Image 1 (cartoon, rainbow, N blue to C red):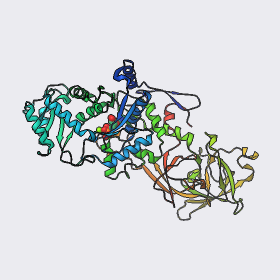
Image 2 (image 1 turned 90 degrees about the horizontal axis):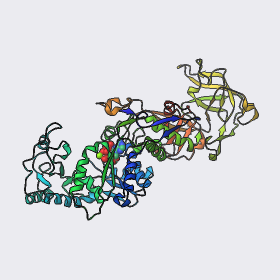
Image 3 (image 1 turned 90 degrees about the vertical axis):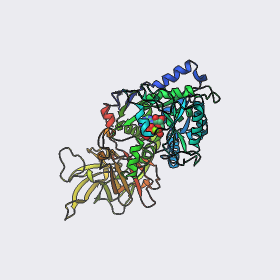
Image 4 (image 1 turned 45 degrees about the vertical axis):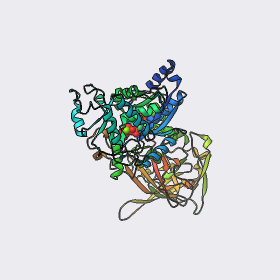
Length: 581
Ligand code: ATP
Ligand code: MG
């Protein structure tokens, strides 16, 4: 698999930074355009997003959501939300609710068109009866193991089931009794009568219904037979009169079966539209896994705090981390629609998030690893409220005032007692500018006698160098951020790294072993400027020089908790050859 960038997209770097993309072709739109030109489906475009409620949605689903809702909108059509809930033992109402929340949060609206495959169980049962009556389906008594053995392989044809030629009456009787609960799980199935010698294994008399004595989260105990995906899906599409049924590549081999069902079941009372299946490549992201089964394992075994752990590629995780729906939609659009599988570099997703937050996030100062600084020549008890810009990218966001006083915190890593050549920040005898404030000089270092750790700096400030004043122009190499100790708000900050160490953990046999032990770092005594007072969960900021941060719902009245959304370093822009911001 190729990293995207060489697969479908051409990147141009432009003067002044920023990455411009030549939008890749959307071949699905081309198909729709062609269909509309030919007057197919009476000029109607109807799509659907069909999640199975067996886990939380992830960024791959976002791709499918943007595509289905986006294509409908672009072509004057509608998109339905449909729960593919045909698997009662794995599904749950919790997942239904989370899926609705996530689709809405991404900015899409299904109006009153939220459907459930389970709402169609009666119709699907009638369709099955129809196939039996037409001699196109039969009840088979082979066990699941035997069905497998009879199916043959890619190189050998299958063997016909000994039950294949049961009479229509016998099939009708047995199927009714299957429904009535007379037989145990796995003892019988309903199968389509197609072709055991087909080169396509999906066409070798596929199972349409199985017996599962399990209550369903919507239909309760009404059913003990449940339709298979390959039967329920095309017919749900037909019942909703879907014109373009968009799914991922692994269903390409199922398309002949999809078409067979559409051709052999009579649903003309519902409408004239015969849905067409179109496949596209699923989205894969580097340094993460995307299958719900694997994500569920991470949750169930406690490797993450839940489906919404900010390290998860789930929509709920990305939301909690602080990603915006706009950034995710923009990302989905820019990666385009591919016909072959690839892995998209997670740095590109982060690039899209940065681009969005750069415009909208207010800048504030926060010190993540505080070092105390005493300004010896600053009057005791004096406080100056200094003007600071909220967002240099967006003057409309205005200014605020930050307090300056005798005792400050600066970032521990902005000081070195014995600096190497290229370190231009604070050191004994050196000067730096404090953002929005004054130039200070470090005169003296206080250390813990036992550990040797630096505990405090004593500095002097130059009153002539106040930001915005005539003397402010004096040159120093570096400007650093700071907060006033007496005014600072203490907070917890959670820093994140990739959940998995290797680029493509999905390809590893043991993906769990590849988990990054350093994916979460908690800093519990960070100091944030007081303008943060009143912030609530979901609020996003740029902490100067440290990245973008979002208030986590774990915050309490007593203590704010922040997630770092992304750092400021744009790996993607660098790779794409544009200037580093
Ligand atoms: P998973 O394998 O992650 O469990 P799934 O395909 O079983 O995913 P569904 O709930 O059946 O999950 O998916 C709903 C829709 O989202 C389907 O149309 C599916 O094709 C699409 N989809 C799922 N994963 C991706 C992905 N990584 N990229 C694009 N579309 C996806
Ligand atoms: Mg699925």
